Structures are given as structure tokens and as C-alpha cells.
Image (cartoon, rainbow, N blue to C red; front, side, top):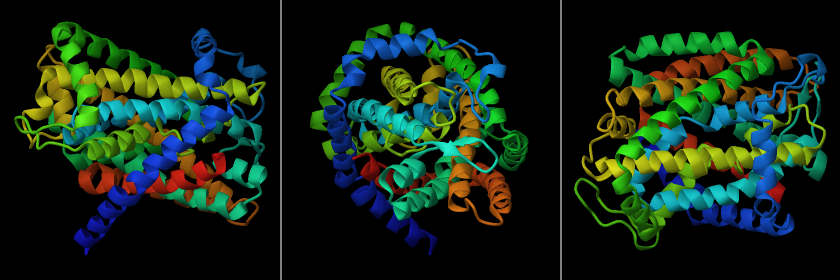
Length: 440
């Protein structure tokens, strides 16, 4: 029965949710919004980077923050927490291992469309945000769909898919990657890892968006700097191989990848599908998840927070994913052993160049994955809150969701990775559909 369900999921993901229809919808939405906004995120990219990097580490006076709000930097750190990590390390390795080097090109294309989409969805999220019964600022696709379009059923559909997606992309995938990496490196039993991670997550989640944002604004910058320093060190050592790696990315994107070593070969269409799905998995543009965090930012104009959305995709996919992809390609391990797991491939790529490099991936995954799963809890909670808004038992429903989410974190640590990825891809795609329709 389980095998039949997994087969149906794989067919749905390959042919519909992450097949040609989704590629056309995602890229088409990006092109459409690019025209509507007159290409502002690219025409004024210098403004985007100047504004975001200039205020990157500016800490506002907490007494000046609007009640129920967080700072713009905390908002982008929470959003980045949900995107950086497993997608940048394991997801990129999976894209290269199955789709070949050309998958990186399609990941870039996904990111360029994603920069426009994220700018628009974050701007709309702030423009149509409101306050909940506790006076907290809340927003996201469910609010700009219901308040902007007036289509309540589509907003509810997004909230249902977002709530379900949080168990897959949020809890299970990242807990699984974290546990697998720690187990492979240090030999700690998976149930022990699951119990510790679930307990730590539960302690953080009780504090809501304030505590989550306080954790992510420290964890995300530290983890990113730590990972980038190690990755740059590897690329300096393998500098001679970088031109050939870049050449493979562009060549194989349009010709497919022939079988070499342990690599089974990949068609152009498969590389496109893998690159697009892994791209959306890591930057989440179009899914409508990150705008939920951005909506809580204390900002004076919706479009100003939209700039942070563009920066988020640029840093996550154009910078982090490219660096990881080059580390893997210059190592040559992507086609060496067909039995090597994606996490092991990333670890080995670092380990063969710098002493103890395999620990970089383990520590990076630990930090990124934990930040991701607590950020995704917030997304899921806001979806549950929207579905139960104004109804008796709303708080009880959130408590039940909180317990279920922590339990799923534990389950994710001991689950089968292939099954987890299939479920995550499925709900990612389902979540994106109502959001992209609303954006158009």
C-alpha cells in the first residue's frame, strides 16, 4: 500500500506539480510580474542591494518597534531560516546527482524568476496585513487573497496546503537531513537525535514569532558566514577546476548529461525539472511561505520590505546554491559513486579538500536545519490560525498543531528520506498553485 502511494506521489510530482505545467506557471508568473513591475528589481538592483546591505546589521531600539511587530532584519532572518540549509546543501547535491550539472542552470533561472515573485508577494503581504485577536501583526497569501481578491475559498485552500506543507518541508525534511548528517558523522543513534531536536524545538516554539526571530537573527548570520568561509576555502584550493565546472553547467543545461562514471545520465527536461523543483525548495519564491514572516516586519512601506524579499532569493540561490554547486562539481564526486547519498556527497566534497571539511556540512546542516524547522512552524501556525480565526477553540487548535509539529520533527529524524522528499515536493507544489494564481 505504501509503495503504491509513493508511486502515485512520484507520478503526480514528475508529471504535474513539478513537470512542464509547474515550470510554465512559475516562469510565466515571473515574466508576467517582471513586465507589470517594469523590471524594477533588476533595473534598480543597485538600490535593492544598497538598502538591504546598508541596514543588514542595524539594530533598532526595541521600544520603537510597533506592538506585535519584529524588525525588518529579524523578518528576513526568519524567512532566510526557512530557506537556507538543507536546500542549499543536500538539495543542490540532489539536483546535481540526479539532473547533472545542467540542473544548476535551471536553478538559476528559477531564482531570477523568484526574485521578482518574492518582491511582489512580500509587498502584497505587508500591504494587506492585519492584526489578530491578540494584537499581533499577521499577513501572508491567505490575507492578500481574501482581503485583496475577496476569494475566501482560495485563501483557505492556501492555508490548508501551507499547514500540511509545514509537516513535510518544515519538520520532516530538515529534521531528517539534520539527523542523518549527525548520525553519519558522529554515530549518534537517530532516536536520540530526534528526541533532543524535538525537545529544543518545542522550547523555542512556545515563545512565538518574537522568540523565533530572536533565535534566527543570531543563528542564520553565524551559520551562513561559517559555511561560506569553508566553501570559499575549498574553491580556492580547486580554483583550476572552476572554469570547467561552469562550462558543464551551461553546456549540459541544453544538451543533457551523458553517463560518466557512476552517473546514469540525464535529459534536458529532467535536469530542468530537478533544477526548478530544487530551486523553489531552497528559495521558496512562489510558494507564499516567506511573506508570512515578512508581514510581521515593522516597516514604513510595503515595497521597502519587498526589497528584502529580493535580497533573500539572491543570497539564498544565486550566492549560496552556486557556491555549493561549484564545490560539488569541482570535487568530481557527483559522478563517482551512484550509491553515495546527497548529504554524504556534500560532506565528502568538503572533506577531500580541507582537513575536517566533512564536519562543515554536519555543523552547517545542524544550524541551518534547526533554524528552518522553527521558522516553518511559524508559517504553519499562521495557516492554522487563519483557518480557525474568530472561532471557538482556535487556541486549542494551535496547541494541537504545536504538539503534532514537534512529534513530526521526531518522526522526521527516523523516517525514510525518499518518502519525505516526495511528500515535501507534493505539498510545495500544491501550496504554490493558489499563490501564483493570486499573484497573476
